[in-house]
Amino acid sequence: MKKKIILGIAAAGTAVAMLPLFAAFEAHVINVTATIENALSVSPLEIAFGTVFPEEVRLATATIAMSRSFFEEPDADDIEYHIRQKPKCFDGEEGFGRVTEVPDPQNPGRTIFVCEDEEFEMLPILCPYLSKEDDKSPDNDGNLAAFHGPTSTPAWTPSVASFFDVFGVLAKSEDDIEDSWTIDLHVPCFIGNCAQDEEIPDEYELDPALESELFGCDLWVEVNRVSRFSDIPR
Image (cartoon, rainbow, N blue to C red; front, side, top):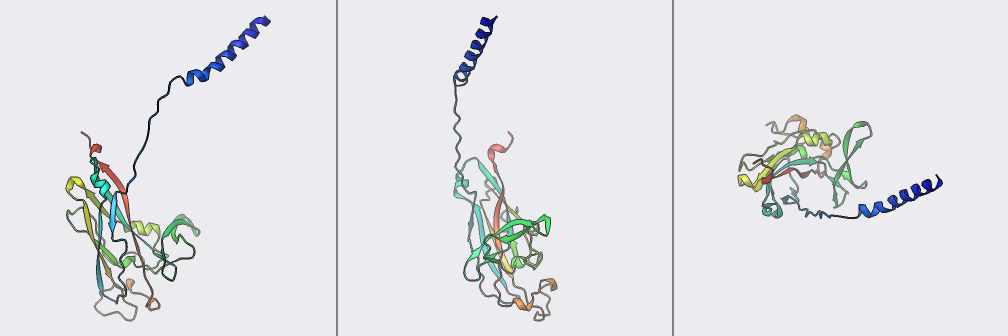
């Protein structure tokens, strides 16, 4: 009986010792690589209107196009994107910064914008006074008129920003590889100094204390979806 027990243990030990040999008997390697490129090309990267005056309408153009790598990728077809307006940060001298999204300490179910760099402050909001009009060639993009949303920078929250998104599409299959957007600045007037023509809605008249202040708005062009010809069911 003792011999059988000893032999049993020895056999078990042999089986355990052989397991690694069977596990490594055959192996196959699948090499996974990818080259990551931007799908869009955007220009210019800055629009500086300079000093402007009440009730002026200043025009600028922004071009959103397929990047060269996307255009040259045979299987890539279309890009869906949106333009989102966010507050602009400034250090009080010459440096501009970006906002980031954080939980609202006063309302845990909501988020707010703050400057990434704590030494920067958000400028008075220019976003409500900017219109965006597509080139209508083809007519597959959105539009947004000026005078929209709140005029207070703290009130321009992420949810407000996303509500006023403007959507665009580029598609090789429609020979639409570039969108030209007209960005209009409709300059507001100051309360008590506005013309009687009612060009500026009352709720978009500015506090006179903001005269000579620098205003700002960042236009973020963000890709929603990219599709390929191979995605289309055959």
